[in-house]
Structures are given as C-alpha cells and as structure tokens.
Length: 350
Image (cartoon, rainbow, N blue to C red; front, side, top):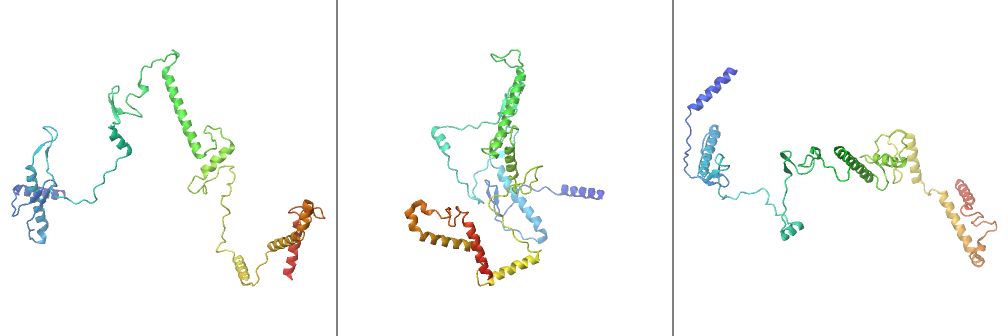
C-alpha cells in the first residue's frame, strides 16, 4: 500500500514538472476595474459557458487570472521598506473609491466628562505611566507597585542604618522582620473585625476568641440562615437547641388527599349539614357577651341620675364590689357568663 502511494506521488510530481508554467500576462476582452484601496477587482466579462463537469476548474482558472491582474496593479504602486533595508516591502495603498456597506452604524463620539472638560480648560494633560520600570539594582524590568517592585524590596538590603536613639547592639534585621509580622497580624485582626461588623452590625462580636454564649449563639444563627434555603437543610451542631419558629404567623397546614377516608367523610358531611341547615349555628360565647352588654346598658340607663348626684359613691354596689354583679372588674362577670351559657344551652336542647 505504501509502495502504491509513493508511486502515485512520484507520478503526480513528474506531471507537474511537465506542465508549462503559466504566464503572468493575462489577456481580457474587457479591462478590469480596480479599487486598490479595498483590494477589489471587478470583472465585466461574461462568464464562459462550459459543461457542468468542467465548471469548477474553469472558475478556479478565472479567479487565478483576476488575482494575477490585481497583484500586477499592486506592484505598480509606490513601495518602501518597513524596517530598514532588510525589512519587508510595503506598498502604499491609495484611498478607496467604493464605499462598502457596514453591518452597524458608526459609533457616536462619547461626550466628555466634567473632569475632561476641566482638564481641557486648564490645559491639564493626563500622562499614563507604565506598570514596569527599570530596576538598576536587579538589572531587569520590575513592577512599579506591589510584590517584587523595583527598588522596594527591603529584604535585599545588606546594610541597615541604625536610627538615632536606638540600641546600637540591637539586630535591625530581626526588628524589621518582627515589625512586619506585627503589621500582618494587625491587618488580619482588622479584617476579621470588619467581617464581624458586617455579619452582626452593632452586636460587638470580637474575632479574638472572647465571645460570650449569647454572641456565639447569634453568630451561629446568622451563619445558619445565610444559606440559600435559610438554614432548612443545615445540619445542627451537638447540643444545639431547636430553632425558634419562623416569624410571620403560623403556617397553614393542609390535610392529606389520600389516607383517612373516615375523617374525610365526616368533614364533608359536617360541611353539607351546615350548608343545608336553615338556622345559623349558635355561638354561645358571642350570644352571652351580647346579652351581658344589653343588661349592663339597661342598668346604666336606669341609674344614671343617681350616679350623677352621688358621685363616686353612687357607683358602689350593695355587695361592696365595683362590677355589674358584685365582683371586682372582669372577675365579677365570670359567674354571670357561665349562667347565661347554661341557660342558652338548655334552650338549644329543648
């Protein structure tokens, strides 16, 4: 198989060498129209009529001839070297003559900001500094700010000047390292304190391990409800009390659709019995309260004049109490309410 492929490749190479090289001169009945600014060539000649089997090869030949004419026109333009004598040859294209359509309109110029207007009025020029600068000590380009910045790494110093008034026998390198560690620890403390303030505003949570049980409980509750399910599927910690009921009222519970058929039948019959009854259901508590209010109103209307004449003493009852039935306040009306309920219940049975 490999031998056959090799023989086929050699035969194709011999055939290509036997073919004469095509000339760069192309003859056309009608001259082409060129727009060198857009690298465009327009061929006005009618397309050749060839069989369908030879159409693809004929179109490739036509495209090759037109491209040859366009390249010939480009070689006639003024050209020069881009990067000195050894650089590539670059041709200077003229202005395009055809306006090609755009997919989207030209972007509108952005209006200047207030700072840009002020800078233009005062003649202030904003100079953009590069992020890399040359470090003479390291002999390389380094960042202007941040980690491994140019000339800013104190660890590379082999000599440190002793400050005035400091102990001359103190190790300045160890002191610098100790100060750096303290600065890192202080920044970490401030970071944790900011997190605590953001999580529990105004609660005074300390990130240093001196929390009380109440503070820890509040922090645990906030962390629990911070999940997407508001802590519904969050596992509980050992010895953690049950979560308080959610605010917003008691949630309504619906009866199951399948299960206790006897309870469902009794509920439906009770509903139908209440709808089919002509008499409205008797609310004993409401009826008793209404009866008591009417009796109190009648008693107050009958003795209004005596109370006005006698003042505060006229409000006292023979039994010594201040309520409507000799009791004190709300406690005095309880026996009367029970009596009225028993009386109305007896009427309902009869």
